Image: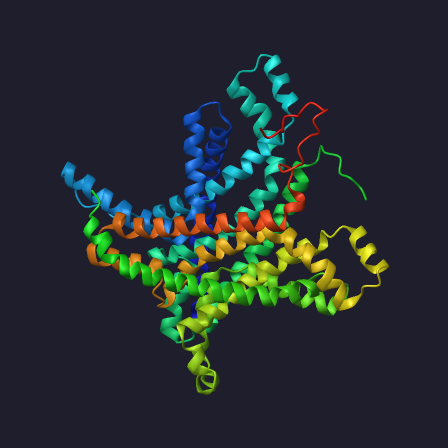
Length: 228
Length: 246
């Protein structure tokens, strides 16, 4: 199938999925940090988080990715020159994961912020009344309940993010799209390979939607649903 | 430090890139709007043969990356000799035409879902009132359902248009010299990422701010009936109630 390039494309799928999964982890970390900063009492933290989310939402993903990839390389070169170290390449894999994580962290900041605000204020007050400190309130009361409210926004961001991983092929990552490019050039059948890649993306989207629906059910177990 | 000479020297190129970006945005979004209004009506229709193909179209487009869609059309179609010999080929081999086609279809899919969602959110009383006045079919849609739905859709639609503006950066991968392509060229010539991508970032950020501001004005005009902060001043006999947002 696919002139023997199927294993190569599937190898690229692995890269795509691992970039997506690691980016999701990074984005969740940035998002949690951003949400906590936006809700914190410190004006500095709120301001920094505001700048972060506004800036990211003002720029195309591709421009940010190129800026971080090439800009990071120059910064790294200056550092290695100053320290007299050997030349180090910015690994495109890390640049891709960090950029996508950083971008979607801004979107998840808003998701998580909304989810935290959806938790009844009385629960946090009750926890404080029981003598839990701020870290404990966050870990034991806020985060577990926030997950349920965050799932729809989280699901949406995941679906957008999986598609955004296609951009890493532009900074030279050996993902599915990049492999399809190579196979298309070798066989002169670009349509076949790009449609195959599109079909795989569609399959990922479909499976994700099904899985996220189950996840939402799981986290809403204790909640009585309205029956119409 | 920033090499301002490089920045200033590349500004004419960036201006041309900005024109490409805006032109692609305008023609794609205009096409998308024209297509998605009827498609949204079909999408919410009770006739399955009308609704399901539209659902299939939006599902496939929304489930695949724009970059891959662009590659399928721009690089992929050359695979078919029949197409290469057809009268369409002078168009299909043009990067501009392919970008317009793909960006239009892409935004059509998202916009159709936005408009369909807004149509579904029509209060049933509005429908009852319209029917009571004897409106049906075409006039029901153009006089009652669509004006209401398009207003309701405005906040989400503005997100989609700004998102499309950012998405035009992807056209730089198929030889269109937009702002992103200019930034990559400036970077390649001078190896100065802050100057190259920083200038592009400023252009995109300003453009975003202007568009968001413009849509805010539109929302203020078309969603005036939903505003809460312009309520009439309280009569003098009653104590003024502080606004919750204040």
